[in-house]
Image (cartoon, rainbow, N blue to C red; front, side, top):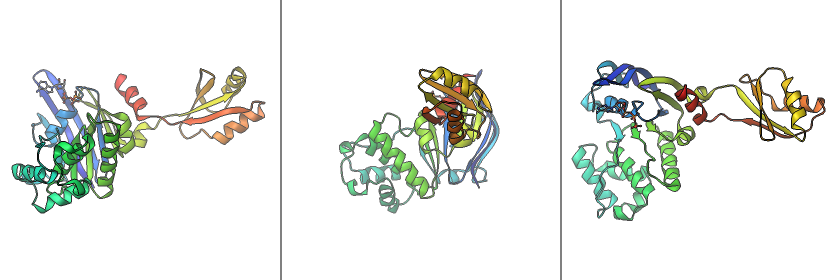
Length: 297
Ligand SMILES: Nc1ncnc2c1ncn2[C@@H]1O[C@H](COP(=O)(O)OP(=O)(O)OP(=O)(O)O)[C@@H](O)[C@H]1O
């Protein structure tokens, strides 16, 4: 089931083409990261799917339906940190947000506070909250109306490492409890830790999209080390299926076709060639590496 489907979305601001025929879909139950360098069109895209901006061309559906104001109410959003009152409690702040936005019933406030783990501190003034708690309250505000879909723009922006971990854990827990979560972010490491799917954009174009593992899929890369790295380089050069080989400090780095690197086999091959390895490691490709490969070409 697709929660969101974009078909060939175009948007220009005068001569600036912000979105150039973007199409992708967001599966139900996913944590979907929208990534891209500055100016790639992420904010424009979020504004269109949240009906803040109109596309010049193309269409989108939420839960396979044409977007409507009613439906829009059932999507929780955090686009910028809400202006909470510092001298009021979390409960009171959410009550004010609820009244202004018209989202949800009075009963949703406690449910939202429990979901973001602020229920025990619901009576404390906002000013006494840590940065992570403040951001959790902002996500709590997005949960008013108990939406099954959340759209969060840079949810960990400006947080310290403790706050980032709090939000990461909260997003994972909300997702485990059935929320589909769409996140625009610059923090590739964070996206890699929590997202199940990603779309990578540049200059308004979609470069790639899919499950994180598939997007990162690339050739295997193995590091090997031995006392005699020159001999090791020669031996590994003869290993079947080597695509490329280089040295990095004392290590030999070997590129092999995806799925062909077998560490035990490499160890045996080197040993049979008279080399005892003191280092053998399969490098995991990082989303960051893939992101730069895609966006810098
Ligand atoms: N109101 C506007 N008027 C003119 N150009 C705009 C406007 N808003 C965005 N743009 C341009 O559209 C392109 C996409 O911008 P957008 O803000 O959507 O990208 P972004 O990926 O969200 O960037 P960032 O990560 O910096 O927020 C950029 O070239 C930007 O300068």
